[in-house]
Amino acid sequence: MSTVQGAGVVVTGAGGGIGAALARRFAAEGARVVVNDLDASRIEALADEIGATAVAGDASRIVDTARDALDGTVDVYCANAGLASPGDPMADEEVWAAAWDVNVMAHVRAARALLPDWLERGSGRFVATASAAGLLTMIGAAPYSVTKHGAVAFAEWLSLTYRHRGVKVHAICPQGVRTDMLTAAGSAGELVLAPGAIEPEAVADALFDAMAEDRFLVLPHPEVAGYYEARAADTDRWIRGMNRLQRTWEETGA
Image 1 (tube, rainbow, N blue to C red):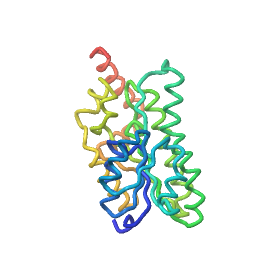
Image 2: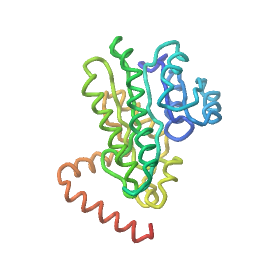
Image 3: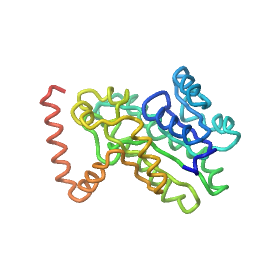
Image 4: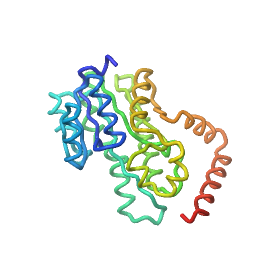
């Protein structure tokens, strides 16, 4: 895409999976890329591979360092770092707090740091890696589902609030993707996500399609749009269907 050539791009959670695929795609399209992860060794290898700059550390607090590495300008920010947090309401407070911090508040903190520059110059692009769980839900993963709903809601709020001021926003909402996060989803992931799982590169392709079309929702699994419609049109029927799935999962010995 011509709009990406020479652009300053930051991708958090780029140590593997979707983040690494996004970083590779942006670099291939001619962007100047900063890759971020807590694991410095993984992003250093990726940075060497694609000609990017590695900035290790907490994704919530690297905007200023990444901006300096990009000669003062971040054009695209991919808030991709995330936690796959299983559990129910009885999960430890620390599990819930970590899910909120990484899946939602890291996006909020990044937006705080980015918006003043973007609004002043009238352009910027915020990409939130959420999940189909943020539009629907995921059995066996209350902290993940709730916080991914929060990530989608925050991205939507950014878009409707700042769209007319040049800020473009995209929410990536895939189902199963063949990453470490799918493995972490355990037996629920094997039942619900694994059968239709796609490669991370397909997610990057879907984002670039959405960018070209100026589309908010990025649905690498197109069927999610139908599920989302069905959920809105008859929520009680949809919940009954999901409860049947829950019972099927329980019968497997979850």
